[in-house]
Image 1 (cartoon, rainbow, N blue to C red):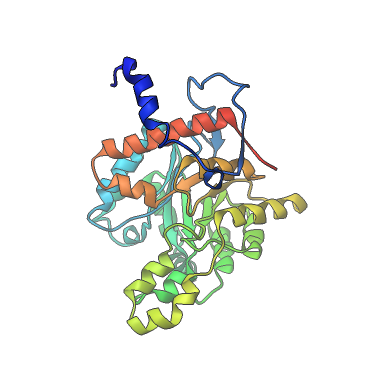
Image 2 (tube, helix red, strand yellow):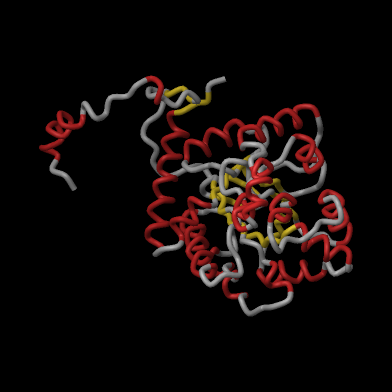
Length: 333
């Protein structure tokens, strides 16, 4: 720790480096410095997905079925337990037929019973289960993981670009409806980096889903990941398709417009896609007309691949930033 006696000397040395220019100002907020004392005691608890969170953050499903997945998932689950976050697992497809990597996903004892933990399957796998009338496999998967429900990731663009991708024979919305008719699992639906337009959101909001996760354009784009794995000719000719989508803020606006004029069954959203720090998350959840938390994927993954302390330090900084944002920042109209 620096000597307090040197503080004024630090001020002199850093004053010129600390000048701010108007173009660098974040224009989304009013800063209100007079109305609150410094935050002490953390953020107010949030009720989301039927459970109490201590911070409005969600670990978005990222990885599964790889040698690193176990380390990453355990680090993320430890962080959820320590900070009071919810977690979506990466794709659990491998567990439908083979339990050899089950330990990589088995994180309930780490995260604890009181926080949300959700399993994850792709729409192609759900379509196959519906067609073969084997949805009980998904029910068994969720039960085995002691998860609270199932996330269905809808990824037609990713599957299209993936060299070994699955072909969807049914519209994802019809598959989801059929799946819901065959079982009563709590469900969430998400994209994988391209987000969704207003009509897709409108249809999902009409379903009795627990939540919708955006996975909007601006973060990791899995269609683009698969495109880069593809033949060079495919990359050159089809790249424009990987550059379409909806940003998280656009999706918030879409949802706000939809719920202002309709009574919808789905009442919660996880805002994710391109959120790299707490101010983006704070802005979007405060802007949302529906109860919302924000999700992060690649930023957490980057820190979760090493020792736990690096991940812990990153999340601690995010939480402290959120505390200050809730205390001193309001959104401009």
